[in-house]
Length: 84
Image (cartoon, rainbow, N blue to C red; front, side):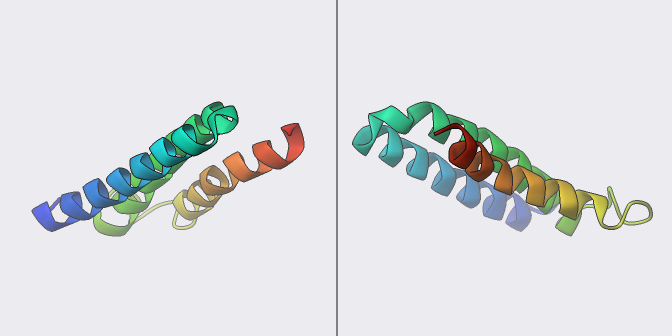
């Protein structure tokens, strides 16, 4: 992967971590939910970047990575709605 792609991935990760620390600072009751959110978004970010810029899923399984990324993004919200 190019250096530009890795910089984009790092910028997204830093934004996710900043959001996590703000939630942990201002709403301490939701720290574990925010941590779960960070984990899911980290994996979704990696899959999205590798799917978009890598050659991993080019030939087979065109939409599998997109569906899995969408599930990972929605999972923290579903968990928050169901278990709060």
